[in-house]
Length: 194
Image 1: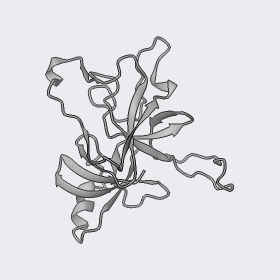
Image 2: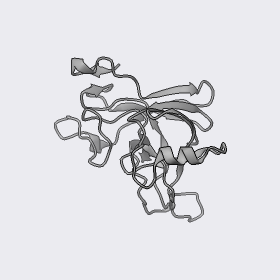
Image 3: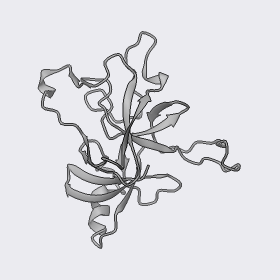
């Protein structure tokens, strides 16, 4: 349940909506990483994560840290996962898209740490602004979409603030979703690959 702390936000829309997810996607029950809570139990938002009214937004790309989830920054990490034949992990592995508003003036959690993370390849979601990063200079999502007029989808990755974004040169970042439609500047439709 959305706990609105300021009456001026009572008409805030959900920023992520499943369009084709009945059999393709699963709202995974996850627990936030301990770094999201201060010693007194108050909410502690990660510094690099995108904030709306001092909280996380639905549609933020999440990654798993052990049995818990945290905001994906697309940053390179080192390590060797068990059972992968010694291959190194070169990027954070995207786990899914956050389903809840977390912390701040819009909050689904209260003092709980349980969140939903949408995951499932071939599921299609509508994401409303500011749940995705449109304004990045040099790697503009709108320019990439305009250039894809031949019908090719645009690859989306976890940005440094956790939101979906386009990188012209993604280096070794892992694909999170394909942009398959951009009806307006404030609304995109994505095909999830995680």
